[in-house]
Amino acid sequence: MAFTHLPLRRSALVGAVVYALGYALTYTVTAGRASAVAAVEIAGEYADPAPLGAVLGSGPASWVTSGWLFYNAHLVPTSVPIADAVNGLGGLTNRSLLATLGGPLYPLYLLPPLLLVAAGYVVVLTASTPGENGARNAGASVVAGYFPLFLVGAFVFTVGAAEAPTAASPAGLPSVLLGLMYPLAFGGVGGLLADRRAVASNPTGEVAEAKRDRR
Image (cartoon, rainbow, N blue to C red; front, side, top):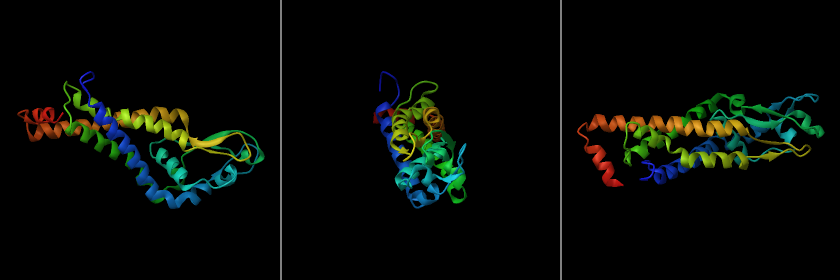
């Protein structure tokens, strides 16, 4: 877009697609782990530790637990009611369910960075990015599509406790901070990689001219 010199229409779409793809891949890998998530022991202040499913009153749906694990892969913990919720008492604690399950799920931590680097790379290869930091900024502009969905997801992936006025969901403040930082940082890296590749393959400037012609 001429006003910002950033390809916001394109990068917002790419960012939104990458968010959806990241969740879909996480769901594919973790849908069968809903019972394992529900079995994670949650401590209490006065009550003995209890499985998360018991704390909530029932096991959360697989699409919800996959959402929690997707956010955990961004280092956003899941805010869950403490075990006292089975007695109707409030209180929350932050847990990384992905770190608790561990094992073969650890590679999920690599999924958001890799997808966002790829997103920034694609945006810069298909857009004109003027200025000294144009490529980095254009890659980071995937935040325009990624961040709004990330915030909405923090509310969508919410399950209330049956016996207490509390709910399990991605932790609020980390969702805001990391939902911004991940696309800005890794999208920017992807943009820089695309720009350096373009310069290395065609140092005469014909690549930049070609990108302008595609706008």
